[in-house]
Image 1 (cartoon, rainbow, N blue to C red):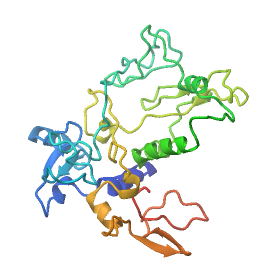
Image 2: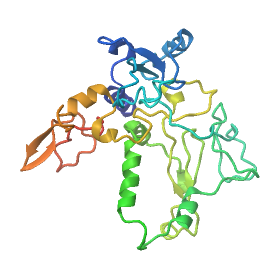
Image 3: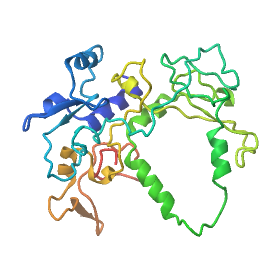
Image 4: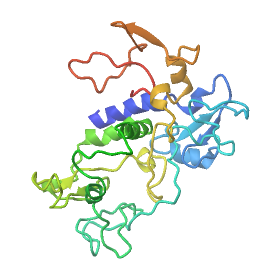
Length: 309
């Protein structure tokens, strides 16, 4: 088994848990389609079970909702009409439908674009601008809109970026590590290339304030894991990000995003998390079974929040 498959199995064990059908021993649960937000149909179940049998990955088991209960740790029952919405494995909310570019073949260039698109079956390539040209480099926009260097702000302190990072981590999971493990090169010879359908490299302008001296002309970036890659949707549908954590900022990185995880890390009194004393200070109780980020001088992963915390 290669490293990618090992990481995928790890993600499934950590975040997805047991199959939805096996989690209904105490209270009968309704099995919802994680993408469509509706109770799963026989036809849909047959699709998920065909080939790779990804029913557990693509469904959410929901206990009966009580209109008087508070918010659940797993995010279910937040929307009475769609009880599975808000749980892990749900797509992120969109204000507008996705818009992708056409499905270019490898030997055809976008008329005014500088790099190749790839055939993604459903036209899930990056869309061009209205005039058919390539959209501006994200790097160029970032350096133009956000200044470099030591700039004092009279409106924002360093709390602002810390808050931004917290919000990002709260809705991010380890699935993206699969891309890192795969070591996908989207910048061969320092040149942006989309021959691999997961590649979305960022061109670096020659006058970049930092990289004009380094010679770097391409930032290696790949797409996040999609419902299509997990086997939940056919390639004929627009690509949609798959996430094994709750789609809204809810501090699940601290409190967990499943009922089982919450019960395991809470003190079950006074609203506290379980803790133990270590070196004269309070630390989260227990030892996490996975320590992917450990360094030689780090010997513990505290057991709190989501499994990847």
